Image 1: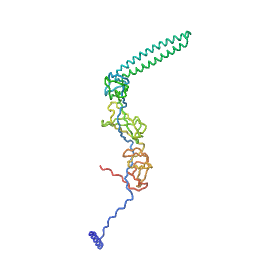
Image 2: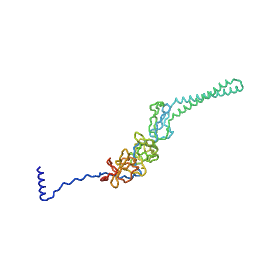
Image 3: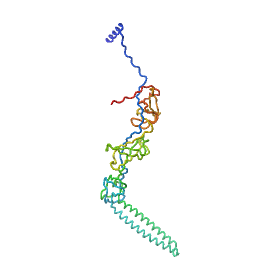
Length: 368
């Protein structure tokens, strides 16, 4: 209170002596134009990179099983050996098959003898009927016996062929050229071909060429075509690039992951790469036509679709409907509706309307 009285006295004295009194600075009127931060739309480069994870797989890998019972007489290929198609892997000793085959061959010989006798008998009775020495009924019976013996021979031939096939299965061979990745057999081991549990003798994989399956996001599926180059990067081989090619795709989007299963073929003539390695696959993705890129936070989505808010030369807002392409993370591809170097407003709000005057400022460049 004392201070207030003192100030009033000083002001009164100043008025009496004609001294000017300093007035308080007026507050600035509120700005009538909102300040917006803008960024420039840039022309998309001819290509962009897409990096996806994947696991290297053998071109084909199959477990080898036996088709006949017996005991392992000798195995011939060990873990890591390279084999060619038809190379002997395992010999199986199957005496039961040998004896059954011998019995089938004897039965076939017996069937042939019976057929010869039936043929001779039929020919003789045919002559007697022509001479009208015996009744035709007797000839029909001989003909039926002859046909039955022919059927017996066919059955014996089929049994011999079946046992010959089983006899051939005593030699287990490689189905294709590759590398032995597993050996699960020892000399003298019992082979039960009819067992549902186990029974795998070998596993052979073709590794001179490999395959990698990757899930391409839905936004990038337009660029995936047969023959598209792909670069494979492996952490265990720093600085090296392995070149592959897209050979096929699933032709349908997985609804669970929204990705397109795509297969890349990778040559491996020296066998340096091993199946099971984790890898990253890099695609060189072409952009579609003359497109532009804008920051992701410049896109405004509503019931009418995708829009961007631009700033004209007279510093007014113009809302433009755009057609979006791929989402590249920090940037979005705009296919139609926007030209390069157009300033677009970042983080547009619902308050921005066509024709609204604004003050546009570009973000400050980061300090180096």
